[in-house]
Image 1 (cartoon, rainbow, N blue to C red):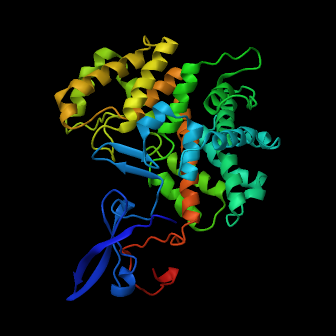
Image 2: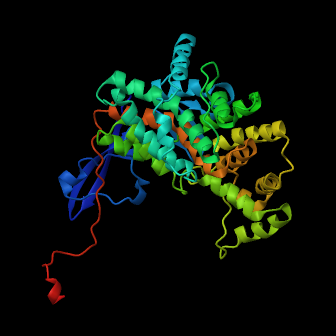
Image 3: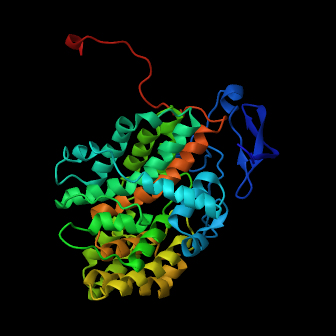
Length: 434
């Protein structure tokens, strides 16, 4: 791995009268870190950090976030520039290879992804093993994990070519799997991908086309879908990405690792935020109910919380939210659905949040989940598909992070420590004597 973190002095730890010098390392940007790799060996101590919120588990060159400044960079490129000027296939190449592609490299990469979009014929039978009312994310976890059974020729993690093929296959097949999960749930026949269509447009066609009539796509909706994919492609060492890396550290095959990431993303505290935001809008119901819910949100003693406002990482404005806001309004105009009661609630709530002194002071700006939930609803996706689309977009980020970990010689199998607070040693007592 090039561009390793550089030494930048040391920090002194003093315990029981003994001192230990710990190296301090600097990345290209961001805070310095204390290197504690030898802490346990030299002191018998280890650190306690629930959630690993103050611990760097790896060096990475892929994505950088500065939550205080509201910055998100993919390989150094600001997210708003990529969303407005690039396309998802180009961003995929960037995340995987570290640089934007030349025209020839892009054409080759794009063609490769297109020709991998079909699924093995027997794979379709796999879907029919699920109940029709199965959650699409349950189907995603099962089917993506099963890819290793259908494409076992690309599961050798020690073979660079096999890793590349597996990466291309997952990026290409994820929209096909996601669309099939949706079609299966609503009882419609599966739609075969078309190699002449671009990534986002092809996905929308697989979701909404039916054999009984010609499908008429929308350039506005396809572009919006492409931007949604770009904005969700990677987000540094979050829960699902860390899950993929941890699974991969054991030597698990890439399909299994991505399936583990999907399972982690399924959690409502992670990938379900846009669904939670839309559920909140449905709970509010009508515009005239907004003042009551604003009052509840400001009341510290009321358990109600506004979903889709503020962000755990971004203490300033979410840099993805502005792009998503503009995209959201373009979609609403294209579809002419501004009279939808839920969307009217959303627009009024957005206006209040951007002007109300309470929201502005606490920096409770609408985040990407607020706008993406509205946009996906307007496009016709049910709420249970929202996290599926998140997983589809994030697949390339997971793969890039997994590949980086595999190629990093300093990485080893993940093994977090614990503070043990259970029973101390005791003798077994027979059941008759208890």
